[in-house]
Image 1 (tube, rainbow, N blue to C red):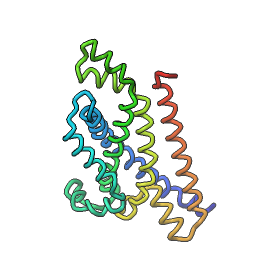
Image 2: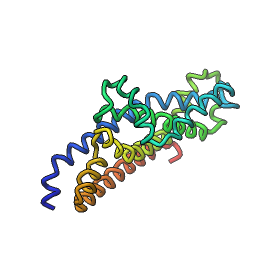
Image 3: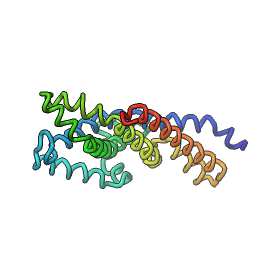
Image 4: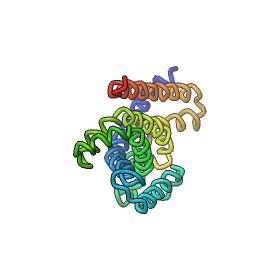
Length: 220
């Protein structure tokens, strides 16, 4: 227990690094993934702006990026990360591969959520003379907002585990702290304590996401 108390400043720093990575990763992934997922929905066969050939290309690109194991992606894009950030090491540098990995996942989830919107509601909006832009904002996003929150929650939880790999490039974070101080230094009590903190963090995120989703769900 004394060892854990001694390490509390480092634990606080590790949590700060994790929140830093997650905040910017999810913000950028949402800004890129929501429009991409919406566009995939719109151009898929049978949808509002169907472009089958373009959909096949974009769908394949999304699947290819999603197929990369994060560790391999992290190493493979080091030159790109260095070009964007100026360095391939550190917490900020990890945001680049995390975002590249999160964006297609977010886009795919958004596409699937929009597919669940009742087609009859969309047809009613079209019959009323609504344009594509109006349908997107006033129908699709309004009907799918609960599912979109659930998608964001899922991405957030998944990428907390992904951020553990950040230690390979000096990114830090709570997962990296658990490995370095708990596993490498043979301090099981530190490992257990950190894992409990991660579990509590994940539960807090899931609970918050569920509450927000329930409040936005029109069916409840």
